[in-house]
Length: 458
Image 1 (cartoon, helix red, strand yellow):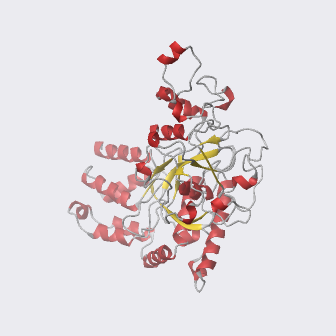
Image 2: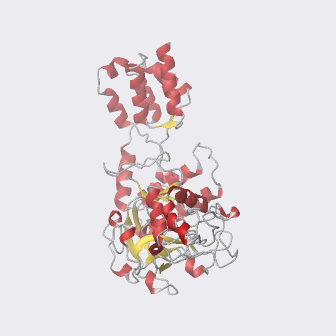
């Protein structure tokens, strides 16, 4: 009885992190029940069921988007792309309207949006779609078949390393929660538990960067296809409260205070070469205004944003990463939600006249808030007006060879850095997803802030 109770404790510990497990995880738990706790497979299976731990359901990407694979027969790629984009946009819009409430299937809206993004990115790519279809058609077992076959395997089969169990698993059509069908052996599967709590996941893939809009600036032309590796990005802009934590831990980045020369010489504060003299201008000494804790931090230079990102174990986004994240999975549209914008979905055009709390406006397709409006956002790249005409098609970045090779202390203050997203003061033309701007890395303004990214494999 003691062994049984220990097994139950093990299951409950696992369940405290997630109510769902993959087929492979369930098999491992059953093996553990037999080998370590002396239970039969049936006894272990009953305990798993009674504790409420369940195997995640199969995710059919066609069904997730409300489509049928038969719809795609005899259609050209442009038509297929259009169908998938429209279906993804509609389902995503419905999911965003539902907020963070759990769905009837037990998944949260955030989990469901990840599924929708996987579905779109898998089905919109001809090669991925073909392999996915092949996998769907080759599935031979339902979950009922699997459970029945598994329980028919005697515990000695597991103890002796019998291969029948692995054979049953390979035929089962269930996949772990949110798992994309394996396109290749190196593809990483991302689940909600992998994603940092303060960040959102942006899947790898191609997107259309820039714009050929006649009213747009030449610096955002030509529109071109870009591939970006997957990454995590902050759900919200870095706030005053978050930045205060950085200053408390790093006094060398605090705001210069007008003490006497004697006192000033004894204090540590930001180096003059890293700002323009207005650093944290709206703060009282090194304390932000009482009502601005959850507003984006402003009056921060590119150097200061880089230092914060390094301190917290992240970095600034490349310009390509920023735009892919901003578009939220929607291609060739002016704004993250489509062709139009209004004051209910973004802070822009001086309608409010100042910054607003982060997260006050709806998230985009990837679950990210305030990607346009509120404040301009620093990017990692050096600014070049004609960069789009010469940039690399994969993970482009201007001014450095790799994201790891940049050291902010060595960056020339005369070389401008990229700003994206527009601000609370800017007209709709400047808060489009493709709009680009730039400034000196020492520049600080009431309209400039930032957010960070992190690579998936870091």
